[in-house]
Image (cartoon, rainbow, N blue to C red):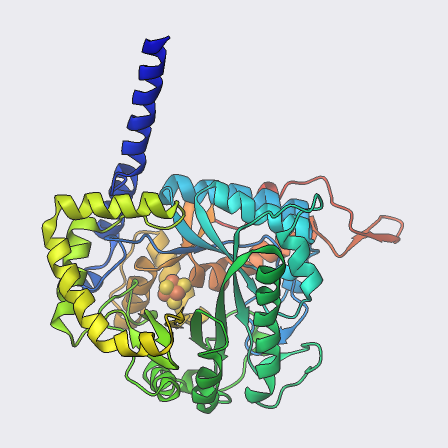
Length: 492
Ligand code: SF4
C-alpha cells in the first residue's frame, strides 16, 4: 500500500518535471527545420521564425461565404456560391488542424478564417474552436463583427448553460471599404464606423461581466489610397477602445477581380507605417523582432498606459537587443501560453536558473522599461492594455502564381522579381494545411492559386440549391461526395 503511494507520488513528480521543462524537444526539432528552410536573407538576429515561433496558421475552404462585400475581397468569385455547413466546417477544421499539429508541432496560433465566421451556427463555431484547441492551436475567429450579442453568448455558453470557453479571441475587420454592414451599408469615412467598433468591443465586455469569459480582440483594416489618410484618426480612436492589436493590410490584387480597383499598389508599406505612427504620436520600432520576411510583415509589440503607447522592444536600445538575443539564444521556443500561469512561471524559472545570462540581460531590460513606462503605469493605476501593431502586405496573384509553380517544381528563378516572391513564400508565416497532399501552403499561394479551384469544387459539394434532375431544388442538401474527393482534385 505504502509502495503504491510512493510510486504514484513519483509519477506525479515526473509529470510535473516534464510539464515544467522550459523547452519541448519536438518543438525544438521543428524550429530547427524551419530555420534551416528559411532563405539566408531573413536569418537575422531579429528573426523569430525558426528560433521562437513557427508562424501563424489559418483554415481554408471551411466556410467560404460572406454576407458583406469589400473592395478588395481576397475570396474567389465562387466563394459566395458555397453553402455554409457546420458539419463540413468542423470536419475540415479537425483534419487541417491534425495535419498542422503533425507538421508544425504541438502549439501555434491559428485563425478560423475563410468567409464570415458568424454565419456558422454558434454550436458549429464552438466545435471548430474546440477542435483547434484539441490540436494545440490557439484559435482566433476572423469576422466583420456585424453580429449580435445573442450570437456571441450562444457561442460562449453551451445549451446546458455552462461556459464552453474561459477566453475567446476575435479579429474584427472593420473599414470603410466594406459594404452592407447593418446600420451603415455604405460608410463614407472611417470615423463613421467608430460606433460599430465600440459596439463590437462592448459585446465582449458584457460577455465578461455576465459570464466571466475574457477576450483578446484585434482590429483589422485594409488600406488603399482611399482610406490611407484616415489611418491616424482610426489609430487614435481604436488605441483605447479595448482592442489589443491593430493590423493593417495594404490592398493586393488577389481574390475576386470584380472587386479590384485601380491604384491599390499606390500604397507603400512605409507610408502606412508612417500614418500609424502619426496616430500613436510616437515612433513605432519594428526592427527588433521580425516574423518572416520584412517585405511581408512588420510587428511592434507594446502596451498602452495613461493614453500612451510603449514598445516592449526598441531596436535603438542596446539593453532591449541584448535581452532579445539572450532570450532567443537560450530560451527561444519556450511555451508560456496555453498552460496554467504556475507552469509558465516554473518553466521560466528553470530556464533562468540554467542560463543566468538571461536573468542578467532580462533585469537590465526590465529596469529600462520601468524607467520609461513606470510613471505612466502608476498614473494609470496599473491599468495597461496590451497593443501590438501589425502590417501584413499580401502579394498580387499575378506575382505569386508563377513563383509558386516554380517552387513546387523545385526551381529557383533567375528573375530577381520572381526570386523575391519565392523568398517571401519560403519565409511565409501564414500557413494553410492540405492534409491530402501533405502540403503546407502560404496563404498568398492559397488565395492566388488554389482558392478558385477549391471553391469551385466546394460549390458542387455544398451547393446553395441542390439541383434535381427534374429541375426542382432544395436548400441545404449535401451530395454524397466527400470534400477530400472534391478538393483533392484541385490542390495539385
Ligand atoms: S507570403 Fe503572403 S501570406 Fe505569407 S507572410 Fe508573405 S504576404 Fe503573408
